[in-house]
Structure formats: C-alpha cells, structure tokens
Amino acid sequence: MKQNQSRACLKLCHSRTNLGNARTLNNDQPDNIVRDLDLTGQRYSTIVAIFFVPYVLFEFPSNLLLKRFTPSKWIARIMVSWGIVTCATAAVSSYEGLIVCRVFLGIAEAGFFPGIICYLCFWYKPSERATRMAIFASFVAVSGAFGGLIAAGVGKMHGLRGLSGWQWLFILEGIPAILWGILIYFFLPDYPETAKFLTAEERAFATERMGPFAPKGTDKHFDWEDLKQTVASPMFWLFALQYFLMTNSLNAFGFFAPTIVAALGFKGTNAQLLTVPPNVFALIVIIANSRFSDYSKKRPQFIIAGLLLTAIGYLLLAVVRNWGVRYLGVFFIACTNAGVIPFLAYRTATVTGATSTAIATGGVIAIANIAGITAPYLFGGSENGPLYIRGNWTVFAFLVVAVGMTCYLWFKLGSSSEYRTPVRDDSSSEDAVAVQGENLDKDKL
Image 1: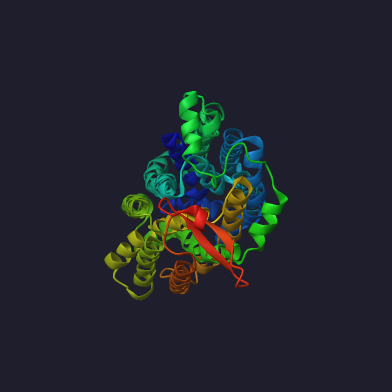
Image 2 (image 1 turned 90 degrees about the vertical axis):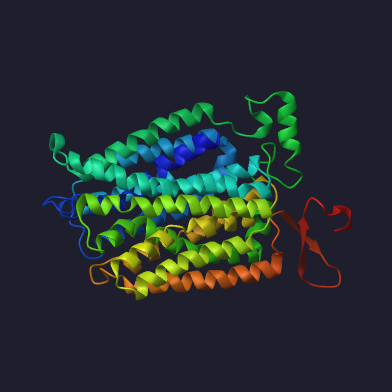
C-alpha cells in the first residue's frame, strides 16, 4: 500500500513541478519553452502563481469529498485528470494557452496532498504517522531527482517528430499519472474496516488499535459542528500561518531549483543533472528526521531541526558568492519537508474524527498554499537573478519565524506525538490540552 502511494506521489509531484525543469530544458538551444511561449520578465512567475488560485479554492472541499466518494475513487480521479491536463500542456502554443492549462491543472490537483495525509490518518496512529508521511512526501525529492534525470534525457528528444523537448517532457510525465490513477482506482484499500487483503480478525485488530480518537470509515461524511469547532479554534489559524511560512520554501525550491542551479553557471543537460544530488540528499534527511521523531514520540524538536537546516541553506544562498557553497545551500533547502512532515503529524494529533481531520489537513494546507502565489514573485523576474537575494532573505526570515512559532506550540501543546483533546477547566476560561498517551489514565483527564 505504501509503495503504491509513494509511486503515485512520484508521478504526480513531478507532473506539478516539471515546469521548473521545462523552463531550463534546452536553454542552450534557440527554441525552448521560454522563447516559444515568451515567458520573459514576470511571466514565468505568473504562470507558477496562477496554478495556486484554483488549487487553494478547491483544496478544502476536495478533502471533504474524499470521504464521500472513498479515497480510492477520489484519489484516482485526481491522478487521471491531472495526467490528462499535463499531457494537454504539450499542445500549448501561447502564453495565454499555458495560463489556461495551469488553471485546469490547479483544479485537477487540488486535494491530492492533503487527501493522502488525511488517508494515512485512517491507517496509522499519531506516533506512526511521520514516518509514513515522510515516505510519501519524500517522493517529492525523488521526483526532483528523477525530474532532473528525465529532463536531461528528454532534452535529447528535442526536435523528434517536430516537438520541442519541453513538449515531450509534459507528454511523457502525464501518461504515467493516468496509468497509476487507473491502478489506484482498483487496488487502493479505502479503510482498515473494509480492507479485502485482511482477514476479519485482522480488520478488527487494525480498527481497534487506532483507538477512539482516530478517523474511521464509519464516521459521518460531514459533520457541521465539527467543521465550526475546528475552524473557530485559534490553533487552526496558527497552524495554517506556520505552514504558510514553510510552504514558501517548498514552492521556491520546487519551481526554482533548476533556475538556481542554472544561475551557478551551468546550462543545458548539466544544469538538469545537478538538481539530482540535492534531492537524493533530501530524501535521506526527510525520512531519517521523521523516523527519529516517531521513534522518540516527540515532534517540536524535529520540526525545529528541519527548519533550521533549511534556513541555513537560504542564508548561504543570500550571503555567499562561491558557487560550491551556494550549491551546498541547494542541498539544505531541498530538505524543507524534513520540518514539514513532523509538523503535519503534530497537527493531525490535535483533532479527532473524520470531518475534523479532513478540515485540519485540507483547510490548513489550502490556506498555506497561498504561498504558491507569493513565492514565485520572491524569486521570479530577471531583475532578481541570478542571486535572488530578496527571495533568499525573505524565505530565511519566514523560516526563523516558523521556528519561533514551533517553540510556542511546544509550550502550549507539549512535545508528545499522541492525540490531544480539549478539556474544560472550570477554574479558567481557557481550554487545557490533554495528551492521550499510552501511559496516561484517561479517566483522570
């Protein structure tokens, strides 16, 4: 099951971020996507940003529909529609046409990432989630690594059958997403209670081990009271703001890593291949940090460690001119998910039930992805290159603030990875937070 989810993420994550590879593909040739579609000045930044407008708007309801239509059907729908739009992008012949495709891509993709995060909550306890989420999310790094390799190879197809390299890139990366979507439709198990690959006893055990607070397939598709309480909580907005600060880094790296590497002085195939090692390094760091977080059953410490490593990367890019040190900084900023994944696991342990879990993941991630609109303009435009000082300093500051917010959450919620439920203290107007740990006597909470 985890292998299928991870492979699906590999196909889809690169379908989304291949625009960054397409921008630098065959940039040593007279015809490439920048010249063919006139992506000069701020136009590339606009193309990146426009994707996130429908993406943010549709992300929240998409996560609620996942429970209504079942995860296998809804995730399959996302993958197939995403692949179709990606393939169709190869037919674009103008800047305006690319804008239309990016809008439809945002609609098609909306709900995939928070949907998978929510889906994992049906199967794994809070103290197990960071590792599983990391295996899934680390394939963003794998997609970046393979993306560079694939783009380097596709660059050799430039001119084949009258198509440019960037057109082949979109076609060859859209088709696998469609095929995997079809497989997901038929083979992805929805919930532990209904998993056909388990025996009746195993299904009962898989359900029971999750405890009373985990979301379940038998929960109502939608609970209005849960929605109101979750969104009204200050913690909802605090987590959303913090994730917004971190997502600026995710989007900056996802869409501008090839451009940053190219700015080090490399062109064509070399620029594509040099995006591979940072992503391989990130894959190891993301999984290791999340695994240790689960093993220790602690969250804030590992969130901070991931954020500081990434912040150091942006600091190096902001102040150092030596290309070797700057390239080291690219390794560090590729590790943003090392802080994000323990953060998301931390968040999912603050809500209970299917509706609240869907809102806490879909709503927070949707709001945070407004960063997809802001990040491109921090790094976009020829006037900001090749060092992108403004963007590097801004994201560095965002990550430092995120570290401070993590310290506040640590103080407010504690460091445990276990479930928390609000407990009214009659002597105070504020809500206390009770951690539902294995060694706690719940009757005394």
